Image (cartoon, rainbow, N blue to C red):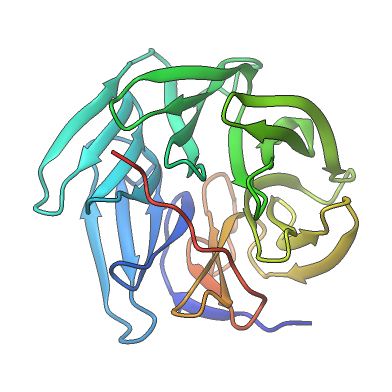
Length: 281
């Protein structure tokens, strides 16, 4: 079993969205409901925390510097000097942004969900750098992990209540041919955030499963890393060599949360991650 370490001891309500920012050498992560954007430098241990304008589901580096944010009411841009502006403002009462990922072409694929988690109340949309948006999936409940194979020809996706990690064929025209890659068995939790490694394997965090799993490209389960926090939410490779797997966790909804619930955990030398593209906007 690979041992975990505590990267940042915290009490995030809903820790999410770990993302390595190679330009700054820091790990970005979020507290969605706490409206907090965290950074962590694994070399120096330096941490920063800033407040976001709204509940924030994802924060990803931009090619020109700064961040793109998936917020309650749409997609916002945070410039390096701290200036905020909307890129795509589309408020829907009762709905918020959730997980998001940057595709190989630099577009942002941003998910939404309803606060009451109503069936079919969420979407997955593709945002270009000019702010134009196209709905990719419009019958989603809790849009979560999204990632691409090393060659960009496959897209992996999680709509959490389905208990599945699905895979699509992907090209410049979009996605098609949705099919299951893996199904999480009853009692093992629900799939949440995911990342794809350099071998093309899919790592997925299990909400109410207290673990991270790795599936091979043919859907075979080949690694399970148990963690003490029942609500593991997302995972991403980081560190200068992209060999350390960072895992976010949550406290929300737990009557007696584990002392580390809400912390950022790390599994050193778990594998080899893929460099992630920056958002083109």
